[in-house]
Image 1 (cartoon, chains in turn brown, green):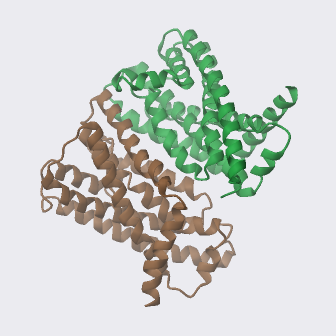
Image 2: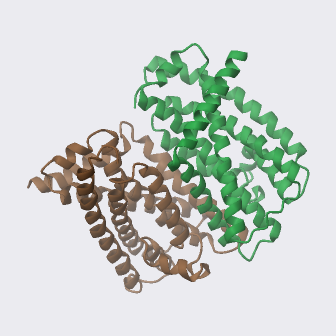
Image 3: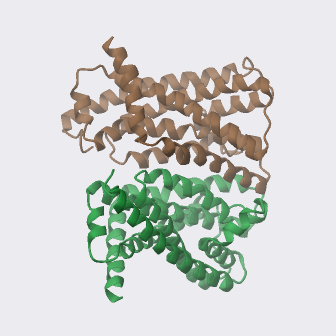
Length: 261
Length: 257
C-alpha cells in the first residue's frame, strides 16, 4: 500500500514540482509553442530543399519533441532534488526505489504523449497537413508507446544525473542526438550506414516510422512490428536506467558525492 | 558616463570569464549548433552548391550565437536570483541596465565558439570549403552582428527580471528568431506578414550582412540597418527594464525563485 502511495502520489507531486506550477502558463512556451516552431523551422527548411513533404516534418518533429518533457523530466527527478537539497533525504529513506522512480515516470509518459499529440494537431493545422479520422486512434497509441520508450531512455539520463552535475547540458545533448538520428528531419536512408544502424537502437525512431505509415493509411496491425520494437526498447531502457540509478546511488554513497555529483 | 561604462566593462569581463570557466557551458555552445549544422548539411545535401554549404555552416553557428545569448543572459539573471544577489544588484548605485548590458554582450561574444565550431565541423566532416567572398567584411559583420544580438538579447532579457521561469522564456524566443531572421529559410518563403517583423529585428540585417560577406554582395547597407535597429532595441530595452524593475519592486517578486 505504501509503495502504491509513493508510486502515484509521489510521482504526481514530483511532476507538479517539476514545472513549479504556481502558474500553469509556463507550460505554453515550453511545451506548446516550442514544438510548433520546431516543426515550422524544419518544415520550411524542407520546403526550401524539397527533401520531403510537410507531413514528414510535422509527424517527425511532433514525436521527437516528446523527448523534451520525457528526458528533462526524468533527468530532473535527480537534478531537481539535488538543487532543492532533498536528494539525500530521498536516498536515505526506506522507500523502495521502484515506486519512487517509476512513479515519477508515469505522469511523464502521459505528458510526453500529450505534448507530441498537441504538436501534431497544431503543426498539422498551421501547415495544412491532413490525417484521416480513422488513423487518429492508432496514431494516439503509437505516440503513447513512443513517449513510454522515451521516458525509459530518460531513466538512463536520470541515473547519469547522479554522477554528472550539468544535467541540463546532458539532456540537451541527448535531445540533439535524437534530432539527428531518429529520422525526424533526415530520412534514415539518406544517413550514412553507421548512423542509420545506431538509429535503430534509439527511442522514437521506430515510433516515427510507424506514425508516418499510419498517417499514410496503414493499420495498427501493419505497423505492429515497429510498435513492438519501440515498446521493447522502452522497457529495456527502463530496466537499464533503473539499474544505473541503483549503481550510481551506491557509488554516490561511497564517494559521499550525492549533493555535489 | 565613464562610471557606467566601467560597470559595463566589469560585468562583461566577469560574465565572460564565468561562462568560459564552465566546461559544460562551452560544451553546450559547441555541440548544440553542431547538431543543427549536421541536420542542415544532410537536408541540403545534393541540393546546395559550394557557396550555399559555406552559408549553412555560418548560419548554424549564428543559431548557436543566438541560443547562447538568450540562454546565457537568462541564466545569468537566474543564477543571481538563486544566489540571492539579484536584489543587491538592483539596490546598488550603478544602473542595473549597465550590468545587464555587460552580461548580454559577454554571452553573445562567447557564442563565437559556436561559429568557429560549425565552420570547423563543416570543413572536417562535410568538406565545406572555408572560402569567404569578402573576408574583411566578414570580420566586420560578425562582431557587428554579435553586438546587435547582444542588444536585442538585452531587450528580451529584461523580461527575465519579471518571470522566474527563465528557461521557458528562452524556449519561447529561440526557434522563432531562428526562423524569422532568415538563417536557413529564405524570408520570401515565409508568410508575407512575417517579413515586416523580421525587418524590425536588428540581427536580421546583421545576418544579411554576414550572408553578403560570405556568399558575395554588399554588406554595408545591411550593417548600417543592423546598427540603427540595435540602438533602437537598446533604447527600448532600457525603457522595458525600468518598467519591469518598478513592477518587480512593487510586487516584491525579485527574489522569488
